[in-house]
Length: 303
Ligand SMILES: Nc1ncnc2c1ncn2[C@@H]1O[C@H](COP(=O)(O)OP(=O)(O)O)[C@@H](O)[C@H]1O
Ligand SMILES: [Mg+2]
Image 1 (spheres, rainbow, N blue to C red):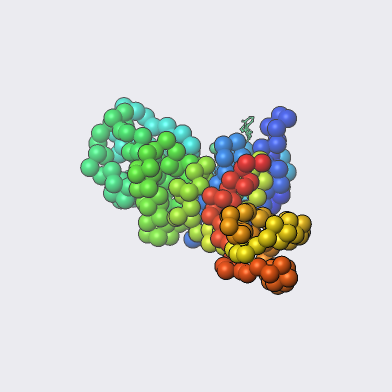
Image 2 (image 1 turned 60 degrees about the vertical axis):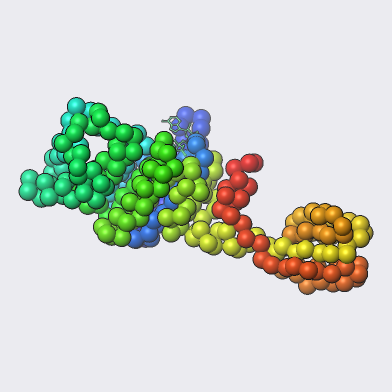
């Protein structure tokens, strides 16, 4: 595990921004830290970087403890903050040169890396233009170049697509995915826009009020534990009532004309067969129910 956090809690005055968070990220994966605004994504990131301390809990990042060894963590982790700031009057190239100086990367190597990073994010052509003339999307790209010049083992990107139009966001995400492959980095990215980023994530963790409410591969989260969906025909009202009374029934919807749409727990198929047969109805469709990640998200965030 490149990141391992256990039992993280963080209190700001009276607010618990994190309330018992476990997080583990494997080397080489793109991990999406997802959740609505205020759910604790940035707080988690700041703790991983050693920029703020957890009130309780333990963290390891690339083998270091960010609380005790923040500088060691800083050396191996690249960070794109939610709001990147650049020197507006300086060019993209000059801004990156400052970063390489701050990171103690020597001259010839620094220049090589800057050229490479600007090339990778598609800003090579405008490298000498002042950042003041850059669009929001270009700034985000420059922010990513900023991360790349460090050649980090782990890149942490806080809301890398926020405020960018859908097309620009898709391009940034593709870029992140490509760079993960090329540079062999591990990437943690946060977002409140689940369906925008889920596509490029190997795994996601969904945060709500400082807790991880769901975690796993997107396919796992959407495919399992959602129960079964059945369509029943020739159903009389008695069957409807009886199904509603069963504890393994998740929902019953009347489609009209004696048709019912029933969702049930995974282990209750046999029981459904029995009851439907007893009531003289038939099952015309039965399949595992697949939830979209969006449905999971809404389920947690509506409460
Ligand atoms: N410096 C701070 N002081 C006080 N409260 C804070 C501070 N930073 C964050 N919070 C609170 O902690 C919670 C989590 O915030 P944050 O980690 O920024 O969430 P997210 O990044 O998911 O939007 C919110 O309720 C927020 O208001
Ligand atoms: Mg945030």
